[in-house]
Length: 61
Image 1 (tube, rainbow, N blue to C red):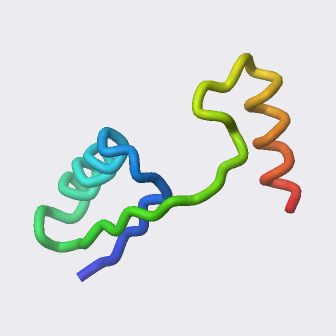
Image 2 (cartoon, helix red, strand yellow):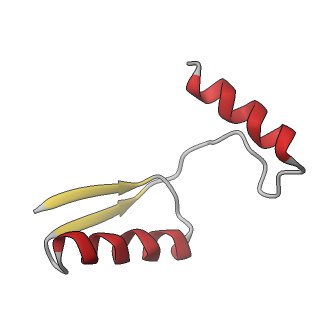
């Protein structure tokens, strides 16, 4: 059995991840665990600059 870690608690995103793995591996062949992480991006980012600035910082660590 595969173990999948979803770095989100957003149920819509977790459902989408489960759907994708159902299609790839078949239902029951994996387990999804959902965890909280601090992305540093506010819940409602204001514009591409705020999103891109944070994304660049994350990829340069």
